[in-house]
Amino acid sequence: MPVTLRDVAVAAGVSPATASRALSAPDVVAPETREAVLRAAQALGYRPNRAARALSTGRSGHLCLVVPDLGNPFFAAVAKAVQSRARAAGYAVMIADSEEDPRLEADLVAQLGAQADGVLLCSPRMSAAALAAVAAGPTPVLLVNREGADLPSVVIDDRDGIRQTLRHLHALGHRRVAHVGGPDGSWSDARRREGLADTSPAGLEVVELGPHAPVFSGGVAAADLALAAGATAVVAHNDLVALGVLDRLRARGVRVPEDVSVVGFDDGPVATLVTPPLTTVAAPLALLGRTAVDLLLDPPDVTPHVVLPVELVVRGSSAQAPADAAAPTAPGT
Image 1: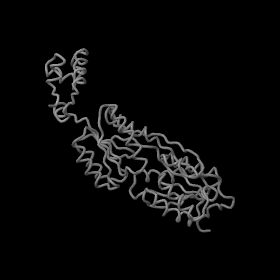
Image 2: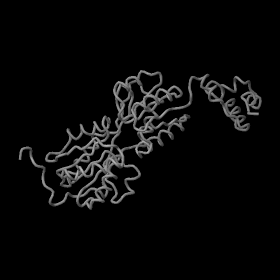
Image 3: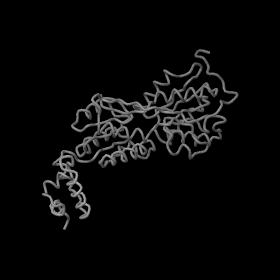
Image 4: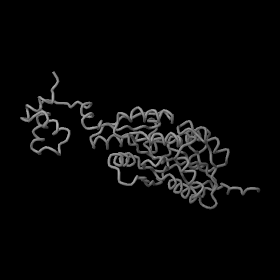
């Protein structure tokens, strides 16, 4: 027979109602009473009925995290941090992978959000209308690395990441850089393209390529386009795309960084496992996940829109531009 709350109450010498309060609302009972109930529960191996607790408290004890691709190291790192932070706060996390389908993301928020106390939504490409519908739902939602619908959000500073990257490449003598964009409709890709337009150093020409899938194969396809454009450096949408670029350049006999420099974005675990080690924009992924949980569980009075700083980490995949690298040709010449 399973141990019941009544068994715990008898062992602790209190009423079942007091035992229930000690476990679900400890602030309303004396500390010594709570300790007695906890000792009894532990000794008997009591496990509370979560469904009953949810009905009595209005809380499920669960959070929901929706990501577009758990195979992407970016979202895997965020998910790990979210789970750790939520667990420390007494919550379990339901994690759902939308397989890069914005329509499925909305369905997952509706289905899993009904069972959760809050939703953390990583949705780079959900439409503004769909996002507004999500915001109008009954469950609190916080956006991760995306802004919109006046929902609370925490993002990384994509624009500054691009600014740091272009300045680095310009200082190395590169004058024609290919930017491998992400998938069509990507929020972070749009912010980076804004950064390209606003922060490119004088004398640096950026060739915009894409949209491309944010995966290894996207980089393989983009590498040929970058070479055809005469670029001496390639800035990839993320580290996975950068790995695809490196692989294709190697297959074509192009040396990195002697002939072409390559820069990624995210600084995931793979960045230091390749040859040469990848120069990349380091995004604080663990901090992104922890901050998202904190803001969802303890929101400030004003809707928060937090921007986290990034840092370019220079490794072996970027170097001085080739000596014969030509300056970009002016239009009409």
